[in-house]
Amino acid sequence: MLTPGQAADVTQAETLLRDVPFEVVIGDKGFDSQKLVDFIEAHGGAAVIPSRKNCTEQRDYDRDRYKDRNLVERFWNKVKHYRRVATRYDKTARNFLAFIHVAAIMVLLQ
Figure 1: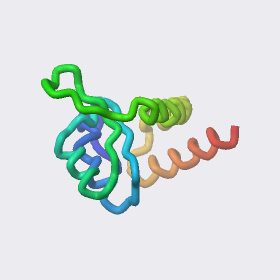
Figure 2: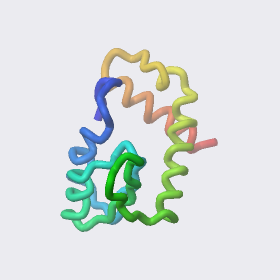
Figure 3: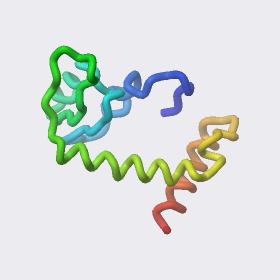
Figure 4: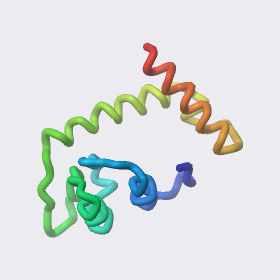
């Protein structure tokens, strides 16, 4: 799902998770939303999302599983080394997504 650069990722999380089976959802502090956590738990999943520092009530989460998020972060870092992905030269969402697929394949083949 392609959104404007100024839109927060958490606004699209429920939409992305709606049709995907999951047991665990791992996210960073940017996904700290009680509404999202309730959605995940209502669908039988576990939310591995740490609370922001300014929250009065800190939520418990599996710290070992949270470390797996690093794998995804490193993968996207490698994909963004492709200038066309990092700067979004493509005018249409279709072409942009197509090149993300190409870049992801290139990263996985290395």
